[in-house]
Image (cartoon, rainbow, N blue to C red):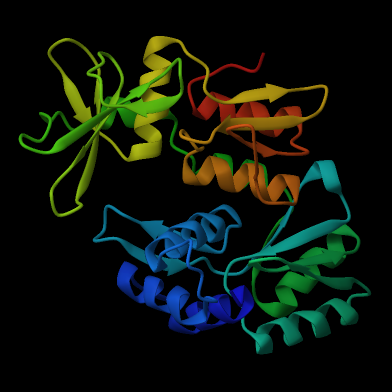
Length: 294
């Protein structure tokens, strides 16, 4: 997969349907007998979302939109900022020229199956000047900016529409303690309904008489919060934040964990790990998920 070319092309388009995204991934992917085109597109969808390059809107007829380019910094890593959002070769060239003008250094680090990591090093004022010259935003505390746009799980749960489970659709329930999907009917958890045509809908049983519909990832953490079960874990000693493979972090929480740590999540032993994540950022993410920092 030429992920740089994919991001350049999607940046040129700006936005589109899920089908247009899937076709772009399929055209640029190396044929792999072990993975379907849909699987490759789904994997790339979550990677590009976590990296802060593309927003996906399943509730809006499954559309996607390029994130406007911005420089994201963190007080924990002063003197550097990473590029998030759309980009083209011409834009990278102009950003490099701006960095040189303000005595900053631009580094482009190749990553397997992902767009290059673009990082700029310099004094805070110089980083802001680079962004201004390139006519993009600069957030030197990206965590605080993104935290303002993360809607807490409890708020989403309170606003979720009450709906009954789809009749005649196949159902799977999430076992919160085993942290996996099962066919066995369970109470007070998330339930995913799948139609014979592949349409999916996820629900949370809030009480004996009320079931609400929510996005899949958010539904899992809403159910866990209602049951007092911690799905996401943080180890302050190793500064590692993790989530179950079958209950990945919601998009914006995953983006904050990924961008702040400087690397994509890694799968190990059935969990996805982000590292290093500072206690401040871990607290923001866990609070949004209805959990506390332990």
